[in-house]
Length: 276
Ligand SMILES: [Zn+2]
Ligand SMILES: [Zn+2]
Image (tube, rainbow, N blue to C red; front, side, top):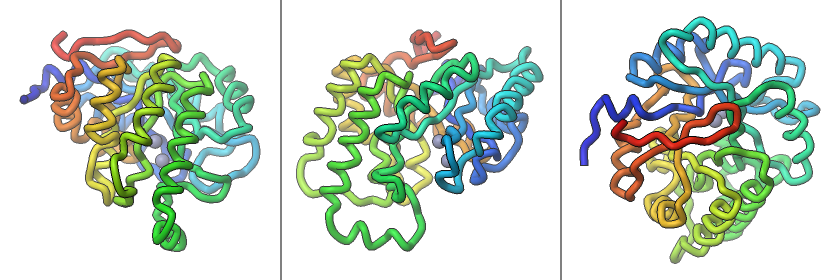
């Protein structure tokens, strides 16, 4: 199954960051230019959400939030003839913080909010590469997976978001429990479908130690059977990651049976066929 540039142009990369999060490089203009070069007609910025109080060192401060909104508005205007640029936000789901996300969502006319699970508790993010956490994985991989998927289901059930990011991020460093992983996937798919959410096929996993798209093919097959819409995103933290490996992700999506991907505008979802 092959894909060509005209099919890539029917996708929208909705997961792109800005330097405000302190671990991404490049101005929004550079991401927009890269998107045009990649053949995309629509993208969206979705930087990591600010927290009410200083929480970690990889997101914008709350005081910078107006600057983020301003930055995106400027790049939207600058590229209005060549590229549709949507306004999004990647929100960390933390139980008990739901009202904060609700509050943030009122600050602007967002096109979409992405729900992400990085933190299993307030001090440990499963995707943190800091070697000080490496020993956590020496035991209890099963427990970590249980906790992760339990939070992912809570995130899906929160009704705060339009789509969910990198579904099996917990595999980032290649740690997988023994046995059939459907025991994690099936109940999760059920909650995602029941809440009418879309999921992201993220090519970021290809750039990580697991060297695999998020989510696994098996998860995606279950998602397709449950009629869960997809978006294909890069999670770009640098302009040269915009649209990266989209042909690989699109091929996977088509092999699984998908014929379209979702678009978001002012939190309304539509589906655009790959052959449009
Ligand atoms: Zn990031
Ligand atoms: Zn991201």
